[in-house]
Image (cartoon, rainbow, N blue to C red; front, side):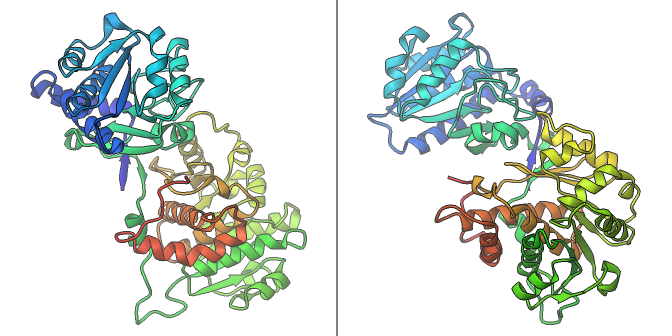
Length: 488
C-alpha cells in the first residue's frame, strides 16, 4: 500500500535528517531524483530545452539544482526568477556554473513557447491559495504550448493536504514528489492537477509516523481476491443478499445483482421487488418472492439501489439493519437513513454507506474542500464505513483510517455505475473481508472495470458488469500486465 502523509508529517520527518546531514544534502537528494525523472521524461538531451519557473525558498532551490543537472547533460535550461532577490543562492550558482541562464518574467514568453519541459518550482508544500497573477500568467502561457508540465513536490496552487484548488494552479502532466505522497496529489482537484505522480525516496521512511491514509495498488487488491480452492463450495465463497430495484427502477436490481455475481461469491440471493427482471437477466440467482427474512442464509446484505423511499422500503431497510450481518447501504436507502440515522448508530455488525456528495449532505455535513476529513467525520459520527464517491473515491472507517482510490475514468459518471459498485462491495463483504477493506477493494476493482470498459469509448453500466471478470483477472496478474493507472 502507498501511504499518504500530510505536509506537517513530512516536515517533521525532514527535521532529524536536516540536523544530521551536511547542509544542502537533503535538497541535493531531492533535486537529483527530480533531475533523473526529468531526463527520463525528455528521452534525449541535446536539442532539448527546459524552463524553470522559480519562486523563493527551497522549492525553487530544488528546481534550480535539478536544472543544473539537466544543463550538465546538454539540455538548454532557462530559469524564470519570480523573486530574484529571494532565489535560492546555492541552486542559482549551480545552475549558472552548469551553463544555465536566467530571465525576468516579462521576457519569458518566447522560451516558454519553445520549451520541451517546464518545471514548476514556484511554491512548495507550504503554499496556500491560488497562484499570484504574474506566476499564473506564466503558467497559462506554458500550458498553451507543447511542453511537458512537471511539478516539483506539489503543483503550485494545490493544497498539499486536501487537494483543494482555490483559483489558478499549475496543471502538471507529471509531479515528482519527495519522501512521501501527499494527500493533495491524489484527491480533490489536486488529483487532476498532479498528473502522473513519481515518488523520490530521500530517506524519510523511518522518520514518518504510520500512515492514516492509503492508496491500494493492484498487488494489494489481488492479495484480497483469493481464487477458489479445491475444497471450496458455493457456501464457503460467500453468500450475498441483494435488496435493489423496483417496478419503477428494475435496472438497479439487475445491475447490482449482476455485479455481485461477477465478482466473487458462490451464491447470490435476491429479495427485492424487481424479481421478474432479475430472473430473466440472471438465472443463476436465487430469487425470493418475499421479504429479506425469507431469503435464507446470507453473509452480507446490499440494500437501497432503486428500491424507492416509501414506507415499505423504510421497513425493509430497518429489517436488514436489525440483523447481525454486514450491510451495505446505497442510493434510496441512504435517503431513508439520513432521516433516521439512529438505525445505523450502534450496530454491532459492520455497515458501509456509499454516498455521493448530495447524499452525503443529507446527513448534515457538507463535503467541503477536504474530502478525506469529511468522510472521516461522518464515519465517526455514525460508527460506519463511509465510501464517499467522486473522481477519487474516499473510504473512511470510524477510527479515522482512510483509503483514496487510484483507479477509474471520467466515463464512469453515468447512470447505474453506482449500482454496480454496490454489488461488487456487497459480494466482497460476504467473503469476510473487513468492511473498510471490502469497500476500498471494490472501488479499485470498479475503477479497473471502468477503464477496461471505456477502452473503446463511452461505457454504460452494463459494460462494467461484463468487464468485471477481465478486470479482476488482470488485477490478479498485476505483476506481469497492468491496466493504465488512470484515464488518459
